[in-house]
Amino acid sequence: QVQLQESGPGLVKPSETLSLTCTVSGGSISNYYWNWIRQSPGKGLEWIGYIYYSGSTKYNPSLKSRVTISVDMSKNQISLKLDSVTAADTAVYYCAKSVVRGVIITSVYGMDVWGQGTSVTVSS
Amino acid sequence: SYELTQPPSVSVSPGQTARITCSGDGLPNQDAYWYQQRPGQAPVLVMYKATERPSGIPERFSGSTSGPIVTLIISGVQAEDEADYYCQSTDRSGSGVFGGGTKLTVL
Image (cartoon, rainbow over all chains, first blue to last red; front, side, top):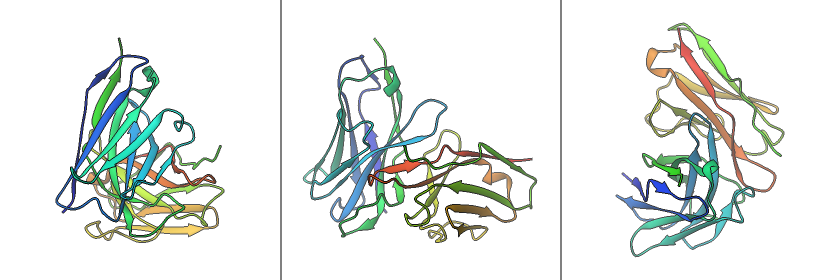
């Protein structure tokens, strides 16, 4: 059973870069798409982007200029970097596995395994 | 921008049927998914491709589609079903999009 665990600093200063890691256990990163989603306090879910194990990515246009998602197969980890953060980036950040595997996609499929989430506050 | 529209809240009594709708211009051409999120917890996938139930999800959860509207149906609602529910699909640029969420209250 695949499990996901997000980790990273809980506090980031404005204008700096938010860096988070999602560690995959109980299975391989191979052949799946891996997503990042965030949820601002008291708000709904926002899709940030996904990465295929091969390295191809798709980002939310509203965040595309500031986001980088990468994969480290040797460590079974997916990383998220968000540049030039502001208070509006304060949120719980989740990583999640897509239900689809082994095919090239043009849609964002459902996500059947989620990490517990990690809370990030942007404040000086 | 592309949006998925959900009612902010739905209330039902235990044992009744709850129906939560999600409308969007791209539906049903783009697949829709439903998530349940209890307070302080991560979302859980409860329906995929609008009408398919993942393993482990109770049979009282089902889905339907009618044109640009997908509906999550919870039959025989139980107290444990009280949660926020989100639909998710894909917008015209191929990016993921979530509905605003619906708070289900079990009276």
